[in-house]
Length: 309
Image 1 (cartoon, rainbow, N blue to C red):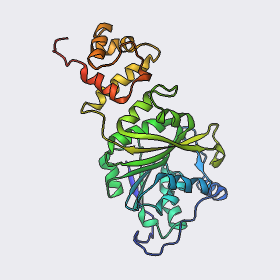
Image 2: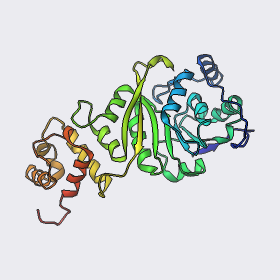
Image 3: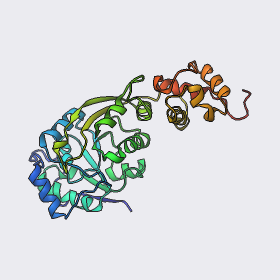
Image 4: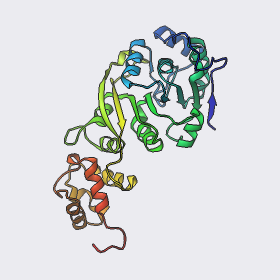
C-alpha cells in the first residue's frame, strides 16, 4: 500500500526567510547510505548523484516556475530533492524503496528545514501510480516532472506519467545517454525509434546536455544525458493506443518496408498498402522515416471492423 510522508517538524512552505538547502556531497551521500545500511541495487537502478553542481544545473535547466508542483521519481537519498525544494511550490517524491522513502523526510528536515513543508513523499512504484493517487499525494496536480530516472525503466516511466498526468506541462529527466538520444531523435536518424515516436505524441523533446558517470555513487558503467520536454497537443483526434499499435508494428521489423511491416496489423500486405495510400504514406517507406503525425494518419485510415475495404 502506498504511503504519503511529510517531513517532521517542517516549517510552513511560505516561511519568508528559510535557510537555503544544504546539498549533498560525496561524504554526505556515503554517510547517509551507511546510516541506512544501504547497498545500492542494480535491480532498482540505484545510482545516487553526489555532485552539487550537477543538481543545480538540472534544476536551472528544468526552468521551473515558483508555482510548479514538481513530481520527482526515484529521489533516492535526496540529492536532487533538496535542490528542487527551493524552486517550486511543492515537490512530490515517489520512491519505490521503502527504506529510502521513510528516510527522505528526515533528511530534508535536517538539511533544509526552511523548505521542508514543501515536500511530500509517496512510497510507491511510479509505473503503477495513477493520476488520482499522485494528485492526492501531492495535494495538487503535478505540473512538472524533474527526475533522475532509473536506467532500467526510464522510458516506460516517462511515457506512463505523460499518459497519466495531462497536467504535466514541462520537465527534465536524466536517463542513460543512449536513451536520451533515442527520446530526442528526429525522423530519419539512426536513433529514431519507438521511444522517439511515442514521446513525440505528448511533447516536444530536446537533448539538454551530457552528464558524466563520475557524479554518481556507485559509478555506473555508462554516461547519462538530460532531456527536456514541453507538452503539446496530440497530433490528431485519434485513439493513442491505436496509434501506438501502428508504431510498435512498424518498428518490430524496422528494416522492412511499411507494406511488409504492417502486414499482420492490417490483415495482409495488400490491406496494409491500401491503408498507407489512403493515409498519404508511401508503402515502400520505412517506419524510421515517419513522424508521429504520419502514424496517426495511418491509424485513422484503417477501416473499422465491418467497413468495406
